Length: 237
Image (cartoon, rainbow, N blue to C red; front, side):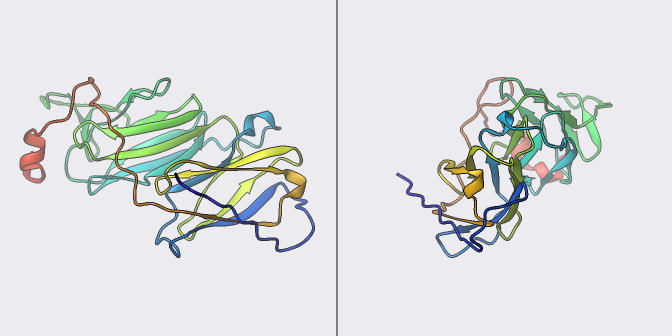
């Protein structure tokens, strides 16, 4: 069972007056090279006054048969542009209830019919309207996965490569701060009263190797198997 402790660094003795908490996350293994595969948020965010909308368009690329970034966060109504920077085919899709989509086969800027018989005009942008975690895969490459967190409030933040974050908070009330990502077995949660928050929050956690890719089927429900895509893929078409 994963044992997690959250340590609070009290830089000053006075509570926060601004609606934001600065902090850092630190692995128990002495630090990771990249902490950007984490997300931090307030669990009860939709109970508090709405912040200025963070609706935006972000990019999730496909590079060297990997999604980059592997973890992202947006507010409902925001869009994601899935760009293929590889010189091979990809087929990005999700079967997450309420956020299902299928971009079909595409290579670079060109989209194709599933049988590759001809090119088609298609926009590789998806707008997400339902809150929740969306698991996104490639229908061709089983080992490709990215996690997209969609929030119906603005009380969330990405973690930068050095582990630093700036998390918006309400002016008062009880909150639960949650840390989640691909290097912890399960989300870490800690309850606070906003008035008792320190000015700087330090979260130490026990990290693990990258989680194995979630067991999943292809977009049609069948299992992955080796095909022509896996043989001379880089030389195909």
